Amino acid sequence: MPLAQHPHTPPDWVKFRRKRGWRTGVRNFFDIVAPIESVANGLLPRIIAEYHIARPAIELRVREGVHGAVLEDIRSGVADLGITFVDELPDTIAMVPLGREVFHAVMPRPHRLASSRGVTMKQIAREPLVSLPNDSRTRRTIDAAASKQGITLQHAVTVTQLATVMSFVRAGLGVAIVPADAIAGFNTDGLKTLPIIRPTLSHNLGLITLKEREPTPAAIGISTLIRSVWSTDRD
Image 1 (cartoon, rainbow, N blue to C red):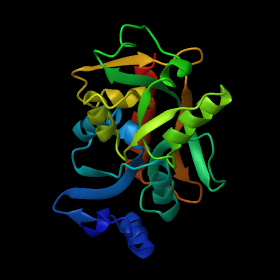
Image 2: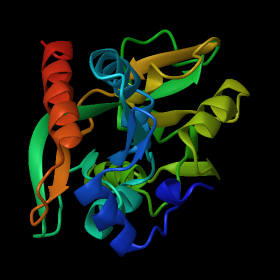
Image 3: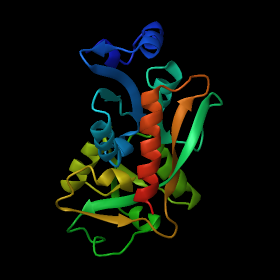
């Protein structure tokens, strides 16, 4: 694995790369964008493509991961810019809000709930679930919402990646609750997606940086574009 991509890149190398830049030929390498997986599979590919057209000499390194990994990449200096949940952040992290990310239920098209316009958590509680691990922020958000309504969910199968969640649902192993923005990045043939209603289920997303770090020009540029596209997409 190249040094600039390694999760344990030494801090001194990170500081040198930011201060001096890293050039090979005419290209600049920046390991700067750390999104949660739902964002990496949602709007981010379109944003990165637009940025690359405008600035083809800059290579953006995308380090998608779970919320905790994104926070650690920002805290350690491996990444300049993160996109993640912002309801609870350390004092050392600066945040710019992007908006709320809603959750939808995904099920096979033949499922008995698939003809509905929306599903409630009480309806979902009767179904076996394909879920992310219980230490993931997505799983904690879902479980907290169920607990608030006095509901116990049936987590039948636990997997570690959203792509695996979708594959298992397609195979008929159960229903899943996933961030709506992530669905666009997956093959949904044979699947039906429904909003969760009464009440809706969502959490806040934002851009995060380390307060003590001056952003690179590349980080400023991609941050500006992310906010612009995110705002336009939701108008």
